[in-house]
Length: 430
Image (cartoon, rainbow, N blue to C red; front, top):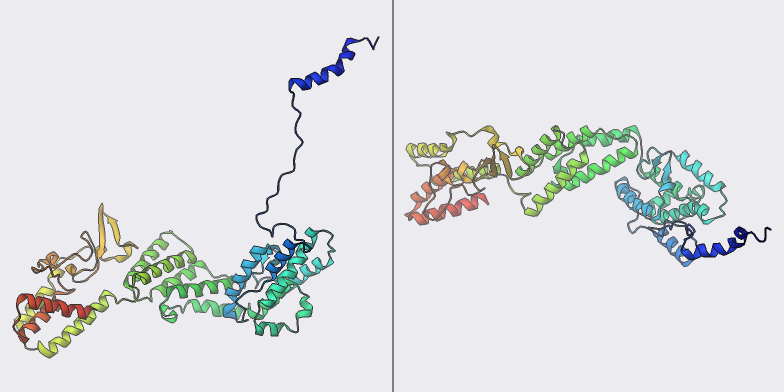
């Protein structure tokens, strides 16, 4: 009876029919593809050509050998860090959560020895297990061949104990170079209070780089300095500059800092580096300030009067003094003379656009004005330019004094007199 049951008999025939209708079976799940971003991310097999190539690349020494002197330590560590990041050696140099590259003053020798002993107990059976020991060996050859003659000589009696271990070699070299004591920390911090651009030949970038290296030393020793103290020291150092525009910009940065616009020494140093490069490339970094030019011009005037202008009448002197003080009768608001209100050459205030100008229209005194910088003449002080378009000198007294002297020495036309005065003023201000 079972053999004649139509349900049972038709069952095998129905399965192929179900497949023909188009019922799809789920595809087998594939393992996710692993994409390596660097050949150093995967296992290294030294029996292959690729593995041998990576080994040669890892042990290649630095072109700049480390001298063993403390002044070269920052550069050496920067070069070593580049190789460590490239070869994926970071985990070898981390102890108790601290990096031997940046916190070597806090990493204890005992911690490095304990980690080496732990690695020595492992008998690798796979390439993955062998990788830490292989990395430590590559690092050793790389570091040792990157040392100069002096540090290699110091290590000659310690190589057996180091046992070709890269992290242990690096820690030994650092301990021989850097003394993380309270005395050395005090000496480094004390130098922050003596910062002056003159010591760095007026090079802002050199000063900032020295500060960065000192900060790195303090962090490595576990004695990082307070950020506010560093900022105050930098402001004091920048104020030793002689460039007037740079000094005004420093005042502006100080206002920004007080307002909370930035709070790190690195941010301030980055601003100073860029401003210094800007002024240097424009050729104005070493230029005399307006005040210096005024002093030189006044000295030249005095000397000229001694040699030819001593017979002027009292009325001439009185008239010259009155003319030179004409622009001082009307006083502008104090803010117009505050260069620190803007780090650039423009200022928006009272719905107006002001520009910084130290032109002759206001006796060479810098101030925020609405006219184009340098285009002002004595017309702003009640005096018109001559018919050739010559503008006034930085102080009206300079021009009048020179004109008086030339008139006494010969008969000159107005054009000749004007031309000679302008030429003399140009020499005095150059």
